[in-house]
Amino acid sequence: MPKGARARSVLHVVERPAVSTVADAVHAANVAAAAFPAWSRTPPSERRAILNRAADILLDRSEEIVATISAETGGTRAWGVLNCRLGAAILREAAAITTQIGGEVIPSDDAAMLAMAIRQPCGVVLSMAPWNAPVVLGTRSLAVPLACGNTVVFKASELSGRTHALLVDILNQAGLPKGVVGVVHNAEDHAQEIVEALVAHPAVRRVNFTGSTRAGRVIAEIGARHLKKCLLELGGKAPLIVLEDADLEAAAGAAAFGAYFHQGQICMSTDRLVVHDAIANDFIERLRGRAERLTVGGAGETEERLGPMISADAAARVRALIDDAVMKGARLVTGGRQDGAFLEATILDAVTPAMRIYHEETFGPVASVIRFSDQDEAISIANDTEYGLSAAVFSRDVTRALAVARRIETGICHINGATIHDEPQMPFGGMKASGYGRFGGRAGIDEFTELRWITLQDGRREYPA
Image (cartoon, rainbow, N blue to C red; front, side):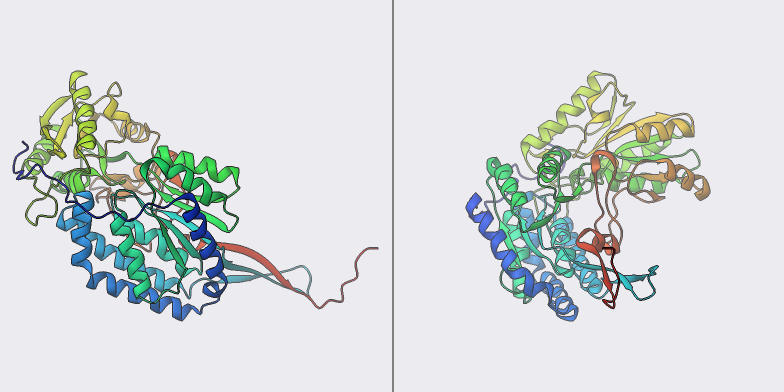
């Protein structure tokens, strides 16, 4: 059993919400469509007050939510607390933008015409959030669409249905009018038919999805058939580049956090450590010390730093990636042992493109070290993936680091910081197979509103016969 583990039982039994049928999903969209006219005309101050109250209630009910996250997904207490804190911040940021949904006056060649570009709510939004950060990603899928005056059909994850239902309950408790948010719970084998029915619904005008690239491709195809605009935040394979002049202690700390926080089950998790060969051995030893200090334990316990993965099958999948890499020549520096859903913090050195773990999203507590000898090679390795969500560069020469960051093909890049970082006002999203569109701040307003051209004319224009 991995060091420090105290129980084989990972998840508690949680009462799952009732599964919705396709007819239930269509009904939820109908209700949201009926609620849209009144909600879209609700003054921004009222929308702001509801979202701020929801943030307060979320924090007041955080112990209940933390316990539910732990029971459903195995998240540690630290992970649950972070979810509640950041979820509340997302709601407050959305509350703040209710009065920032503006437009502009555009000069017209007709002196008698007033031409305006204005943003209006788009209608019903279909929002889908995953299990791995159920409060953060759940609130993100709801808050800005609501702030913009849209109504929402929220398809909860089948693996965190109770947590997602709590979010909707909190919004209702905060005073959200009936029908503005409806929640749909699907069985795992019925997800696609429910999504297809909702995307096809004429009232649904936007689709936003956070999850795997595999599922995102299916949703994009369905959306394209119905000409529905999609916002997709998908998988990642985040590189952290350590240049030869980096602060190795800082880089090792960021790498350990990025690779092992929440058992590596975050879209921004550090999958690849691209390290200059001259300092690689020193860096690996510093990282090894941090990895070997991480103990694992039962879900929700307060003292452990590494909890169980979402399932034993998920841990076995990651263990198979480790075994494949070792069989093909990688060096297992530390970790690698699996027992059920528990998997030790693992470091692999000398990872090459011949190995599955070089290409596949790991989504587990594994740091893969890939060595390089010059800067161009480091950038090439960082970009040698279908994914493009987050990245990081460590160097004491920030001008050099910025030049490297600008060449990395990701939507997000942090200089001298971890690949995992999120703030609700930032334009969050990826490139390539990590999706398209941006959550957060003004970028979120652009995604969840329609930009319209409206003119005021005097009516005395003469038209050609």
